[in-house]
Length: 633
Image 1: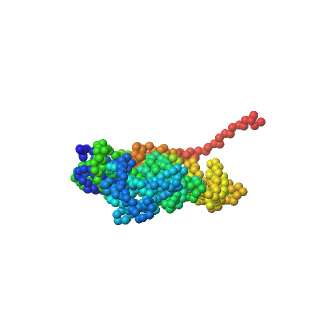
Image 2 (image 1 turned 90 degrees about the horizontal axis):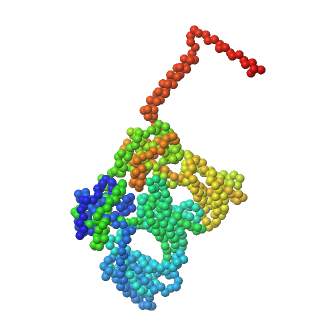
Image 3 (image 1 turned 45 degrees about the horizontal axis):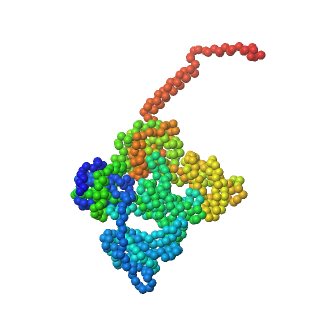
């Protein structure tokens, strides 16, 4: 028997958790809680269960990636005869002896055809309703023989079912399987896919917005409308690691679709592994094909359940989505094998809502929220910073005008609170954004010139040039960089991406050498650059951002210890106001200014005294020196 002391858990700070759910759990025995949407929130492994007296109850977080045993059993079956040859179109199966819901059926049919084949199947219940569908098939995919004999079914309870094929086939075995113990399913998110863009010829990039940053993704399933295709897909993400934005590849695979016997034989799955940022990027290699019509995608992420034992009288409160992660272990982790050998009840789904005691100001220790007195007398300008609420970790995206006026490394930025003290902040490299530019096109001696003009100097990461022309080979020069070749055949895409070394400029010129050919048709160009931001905890009485002092040094704050926390998705977005007047001089500067004015006045009086003639005296003409005879000669 497992004996655990309920109140002996590590200390819990309820104010750190933004979401809560009230549950009615059995006082004794094993219970399981489905975290549901909480599995996609930040820090999903840090959840807390409180009893009626507010004490932490020992628990264990089970996830869908935990190895689980699968069990299987042969299923009795009988053909449904309607006359005709020995092969039949349908059979009955009886899963009552298994005494457990099943989630997969393996159906063996006689492989008597030497060519690729496919047999669609339907599983129907005793009332004739279709409860599952699938296809068993044999094909040659990626130049290798492949075979599928398994279809998924939705937790079918014990009973009698019929399996129907689309034609007469030879059946010779049916097997059912299910996950043993507390099997945790993955979270499935059906998300829209944005229209593709081209980073380079023959490659289309599709973007998928995720509900939160930091999601543990494991599989991406594409929904493609095209009838036949075979493409290489790379799944990438851009993620901020606390110091910079990095691009990571999470997985790659070929996706394909054939049509055999009226059925679609397809592989649309890309297995991935890693934490995603706010978006996923699907890089599809089209080569000379048109881009695929990808409408939606199903993103599978790690699912999570909570396992508890002998929780005592309730009601119980489950807390999730902390502003700062502090996961802790319990002795219950050691007893997981024993608990899973017991009968595990069906998981209870948590119904989440805002936690009334949530206090986001708990994120950072109070001494780190205010720095030394600010010295901003030489900064050119300031802008008011507003946040959805004081004490909230907030991200302010810097306008182009601020970036243009600040130092190139943004080291002169200062956030100042109402008391004149510095507000420690972090620099966020930000995502890539499209830059606004005026484009002028001209023809000069066999060259097409595209001039991009920006209102203020901006940093440019890359440019994208497009054209309706479908057959050409041209030399392209971007700015002061070297010349590169742009080749397009009628079957190719016509976009051209050019990456640049970050340089701040308000003008960029692109020269395309047309030579003796006609200029390219309907040229378009877009520029992309970083969207830098500052992250800080919003002061209680507002703050001002000062910038534009090249002589100042980069600040160094202890807040860097909490960079991974402030960069998480719990950060809210704030607004940067319009330009305000320069900062007023500090007290010591005003004293220096007063002393300088006094010294200047005394100097002017002394000079005036030297210039005024004394009364009653005539000055004699000073004697002139005799000329030097030798020099005169």
